[in-house]
Length: 80
Image (cartoon, rainbow, N blue to C red; front, side):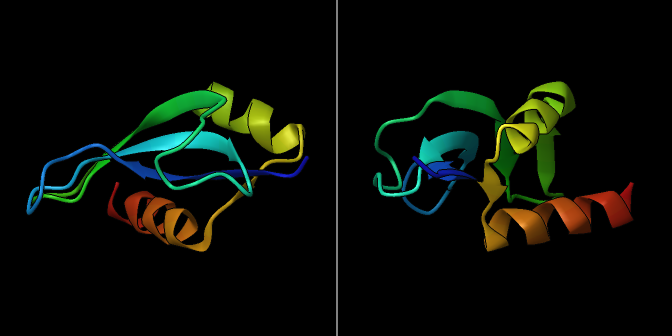
């Protein structure tokens, strides 16, 4: 079973907020999640909260971040 670290939408229409989750690759965007690692609020200014310890553990287990999440995390690193 391959795993992805990706975003799952929880906000309302027009005001999205996303959870950063670990999920099987074939599950739906808002489907079954194995673990919640943090959240992302794309408002002004964008806010990312991520449990780095859990994130590293899942990377070591073979989970791969999605392209969109990778871009968000890279832009967050540059801004801090």
